[in-house]
View 1 (cartoon, rainbow, N blue to C red):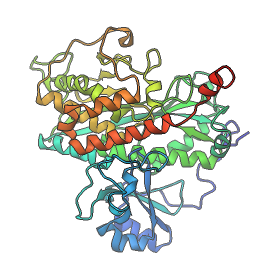
View 2 (cartoon, rainbow, N blue to C red):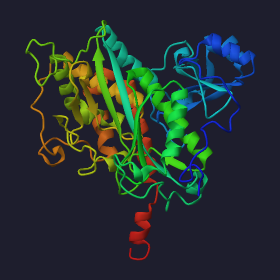
View 3 (spheres, one colour):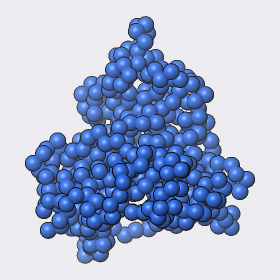
Length: 477
């Protein structure tokens, strides 16, 4: 039996060389320089999130990082921002790598993201932003897509706080074993629906504890962790933070969890729908604060708002309803994403909002300072920068137009006679491409770029012969 699942677990970093307590996050540059001089840090990874929300980059010598890269950036091929999950770049992207001669852009490090990686001793990681040859931000880069919407909030004196709740499935098989078996017949790390259960997840807890402790050491603050509905499924929730930092933490967490799984000889997946059971969600909690730190969503007591919501919050929620179908591509970017979004699957399929109603894609929860929305459309495969950007853009659309908010939906929203989310990636791409709202709030280049990403996924899927087709037509067709 795998020693990390079911046989108890030695101290998390027992196999690593002794180290002082983790540094503060972000790691101060002076601390990095001192640790480099002392030989404690031997690599700096300079990376950026790609269209899929993966951390892509290169290892840089620490002294070169301090002397050159920190100020001028590190060059990377333009195609990193115009590829599918297989790293293939098809025509149609607004930023065309082939048309640009497969040239470079620069990844300019953001020192506010600098952290040490417990699963990669001696290594620091810094995320950065893509800059073109003229030193301007590349608009289609996911981090920049979010920054543009955060700038729109800042113009109003507001900032966004966000938290993402990611679920994942753990299997006893290693990644290599899963690959060699074509990802079929894998054994989940637990055997039953373990939603909120305790005894049923004791076998998986040691491994999940390893993930939690590692993320704490990178500067994240774990709030809770529990088993979920699908056998082998778990959810770790981190404390909310400024929206950009939350998304940065999100992509580091996904990369780190996979690395820790590989080291443990097990496999985990964040894919939206692995099989016929419950899918992996990524619920996004979001609220706004003004320049004094006061909650924008809380009712000010004037009686102008309903259900404890401010007028701004009412319009913000109304904007979600108005834009949800057209923006769904930014929340559900893959063919597989839409297999999760189905009735009676603990995921929304209709367009509605409700008060503490988990069957609605927009769930309003909390009072006063904790007043927020929980946006329940994204799955574990969502790019957090794009999803949070879409939520903010939709909310501002509602606020700017003072959209009226309908009455909340009670009961099962999936069974109600309501407008529906797209049923497929093809529908979502079409809705996105035809959206005047998307063009107005994101710009035509971003609409074109992410439509091309969706079409690349559709083309790859269409060219694949599935097990379903072979079983159905090999002998009887």
